[in-house]
Image 1 (cartoon, rainbow, N blue to C red):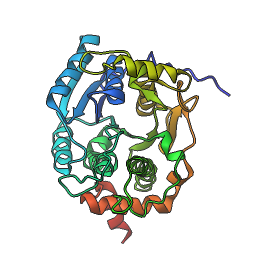
Image 2 (cartoon, helix red, strand yellow; image 1 turned 180 degrees about the vertical axis):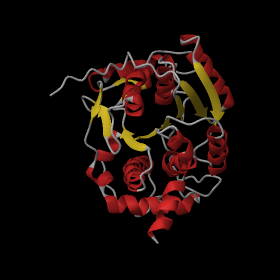
Image 3 (cartoon, one colour; image 1 turned 90 degrees about the vertical axis):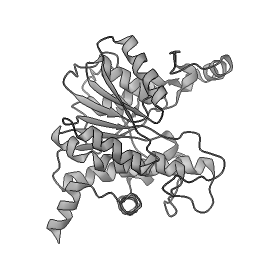
Image 4 (cartoon, one colour; image 1 turned 90 degrees about the horizontal axis):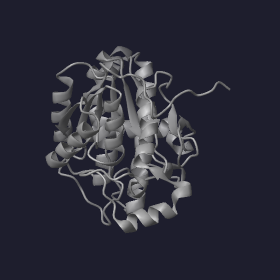
Length: 317
C-alpha cells in the first residue's frame, strides 16, 4: 500500500480558492475555517449570531494576520436565512468548496419546531444544508467544487428507518440527533449519485470527526473556554477522544485533498481519533432507496429543486 503523505498540520497552498463553512463560530467549524485560512484560502465563515461571528473572525486573524476571511449571517434552521445567505455568497465568484458543518449536537428534551414548521434538529442538521447546497450549486459548478456533509459515528449505533423524518411521533433527543445524521449522510451519498448522473462537475463527500471534545481543545478567547470540570472529565476519556482541532482534520481533508473522490466517506484513522482516512459508512446510510425517498422529502419540505438535476429530469421526460 502506498504511503499516505497527507499532513493535516501542513496543508497545501490554497491561495485563490474560496470556501464557505457553516457553523463557523465554534468547534469543528471554527477550526476548519482556521486551518483553511492558514493555508491561504478565502473563507466565508457563517453563523447565526453576528457577535460570535465577529469574535470568530477576530480569532482567526489573531492567528493569521493576513487571513482572507469574511463573515455571513446564516441560520440553517431558517429557510429564509438560507436563501438570503446563498444569494449573497453566489453573487460573487465561483465557490471551490462547501463545508456543511452547522448542527445541533444537544437536542432539546421536548420536540420543538422552527419558524418554517419543521422539527428543529432535522431542520438544522439536514433540511437547511440540503437547501443551501442546492442554492449554491451554480457557484460550486463554476468553481468545479466539492461539498462535504458532516456525518457522525452515531449512525452506526442505532439502526433506524426514516419513516418519520421529523419525528411527529416518538420524539427523543437521542433519536432526533441520530436520525438527522443518518439523513445528512444519506443525502451526501445521494447528492453524489445524482450529480454524477447529471454530469455536473461537483463532488459530494461525507466526513465524520470521530469523538472530538471541547474539553480536550485548546482555549481560545470567544471560541472555546471549557471549565475545569469539563477539562477533567474530557481528559479521563483521552484514550478514545481527541480535540475539536484534530476532528476538523478529517473535514478539511475531505474538502480540499485532490485525491478525495465523490461518494467517499472519511473519518479518523482509529475511528474515534487520529489522522483522516477513508472509512466505511453505516449500512443504513448507503441504502439508495431510502436516500431517494429522503431526497424527495427534502425537496418538497424546502421547496428547493437543485438546478442541474431539474434540467436533467426535464431531458428524461
